[in-house]
Amino acid sequence: ASTAPTEKRHMPLMLKRVRDAMRASGAAHAAPSAAAAPERPPVTPSGDAPTPSTSDLEISGVVSDPPKAPVQTMPPTPTPVEPLPVDVHPKPDTERDTRSSDHVELHPTHPWFTHHPNSSPVSFAKKYPPTGVTPHSTEWVYAYSLSPQGAPVPPASEGNFSGKWMVMCVPSNELDTKWQQVCAAVEAGEVSAAKVVPGGEAHLPQSRGTPIIAYTNDFRNQTDVLRAGLALRKRFGDLTKLMYKPDVFTLCDQERLFTVGPRGGKKPVPKCPYLLTHGLETLKVVAQSLSLAKEMAVEPWAKNVSEDVAEQATLEAHQQNLGSKDKPIEL
Image 1: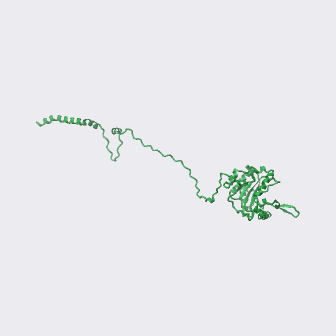
Image 2: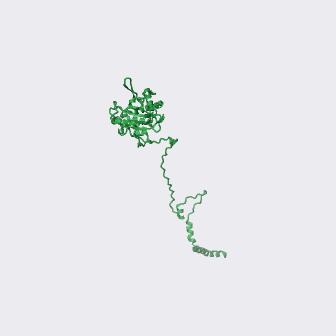
Image 3: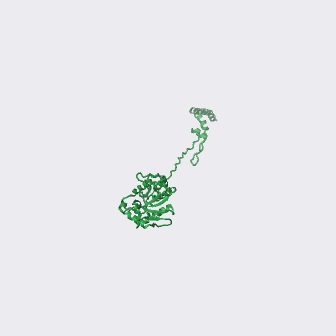
């Protein structure tokens, strides 16, 4: 009975001491703030923490704005590049045609109007049509092949055996087209060279057209002569008449192209030993003419003289207004 009042009497003093101790340490002020703080959500079993709320971020001192997603910068799309053409089967340098099909360069030293070796004969014919070349500025418009087919050129010591196929009386309105066709034959090596009178028929008084001439190397080789003639006729058309004349008949003394009869009369020797006419696939051979050509070709004068000498005479004939039906130019 005496103990209970004593404990009751001492309780207020103990509470007072606890209160004073708490005030002195500041715990009394911290306790309410700690009690007011909300509980944080527990960590999920997977270990991924839930997204904190705005209030949590504010309490922890983190900026309340949500983080921005990183901006992905796409690299620029590259410009497509056109692949360079590749020659699957390149030719050896020795077999490549080095002649340009676009750029045409004239030969700087040749006596006739012709192309540089590096220029295409066909491109030359297109850029410089013969009707556009000034007459008398040159004897001939000329094209040549770097790799002709057929018979090779015989040595000069053997004789002068060159000859030419001729397409006669080509009118001016067809001349440029046919010249391109024969230059295509030159470029293909079907003939060794070709030439045509500049200016067309307009500057030839009473002329019925202009001749186009295409060369072979050896008129004795009838197989080669026929090959070249058929190639030209295929380009010109089946109705084209072709006549073949050896160069010695141009170079020789023209009196030799006549025979003298018993009474002193003169009879001309045909100047074309070969003819290729419509419907024929073989040469028509004029034996008398061919025999005389072979005889002249091995004579000393024929071995030494060049056709340039005869071309000078042709130019003089132009200047004297020759080339008509009555006064033909020797080709």
